[in-house]
Length: 356
Ligand code: NAI
Ligand code: MG
Image (cartoon, rainbow, N blue to C red; front, side, top):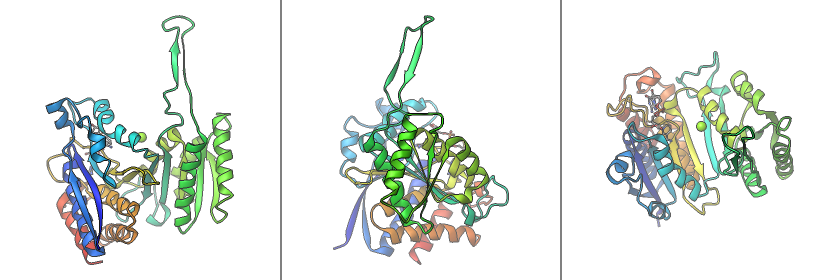
């Protein structure tokens, strides 16, 4: 019997409505070529929904998504609706309630994509940032006392649990094991943050004992940021706490070039809940409606989704098709110096996947 994957599709706002159809076009080509089915359920949740109903998604929205294996998302946010409403009304509840504790971003220079770093070639920028996405510095433990007086103070605690620390570090080691270089770098700051970060280092060293084949190193976050710019070729997989991972997961894709190609995943590795796959970019109101945006970030997110669903060959066929298209001068959108429309790029990649 053919395997069926259940996917919830949320195009969202702006160019999300243009990139998601191209992502689906390529996923469909991959499903045919590699012999599995996709059962798609479409949701129109967006800022438009908010303007009509006062809610980004219905009250039982999370329950509606619960039966899907994955959520395939475009972008959320539109002028007129404050960003904290669109973010906290849709994206954050999905990430939190489905315990998507891994935020994963590939940082890979694609052929023909312009990196802001001088003289770097695709072979030199190819790594992953793994960010802890549920605890750490972004906790809600803390408060303000004696407001408005001389004694006023504020505090916010960093919370590192053993469960939360070990599971993200383990995920990063497992990912490193799947890569040819098998190298893992830890982001720390144990010289300045003297309780939580030494604990992070301790758990990193402890977990490393179970992965003798993985080469490890660690850097303080400040110099690590400098190394991302000066020596991107040093990195294979990089793991960080919520705050450090947040910083690195914007910096990493930025050194790898255009925002239009950057992909990301929010993963619950145990598959107790759906995971979510989305491009790094937002709804791009400045170019929305013209079908000139780059669909590659969305299509690449689709490849990450197939990997998670246990279809690694199909995932590889998509990333290979993207790289070939760019290396061989196929259609490209304006942000990559071309003239092609969003659909031209989607079609070309889908055809290459079908023929792979
Ligand atoms: P943005 O990523 O939407 O756009 C930034 C710039 O990059 C714009 O000039 C845009 O035209 C360009 N750009 C983005 N994606 C592109 C693509 N695929 N092809 C070609 N050019 C592309 O970020 P911005 O403008 O800060 O945010 C717009 C809205 O999107 C806001 O409401 C924001 O909250 C939301 N947003 C949502 C995200 C999500 O859904 N995860 C992530 C980032 C922003
Ligand atoms: Mg960020």
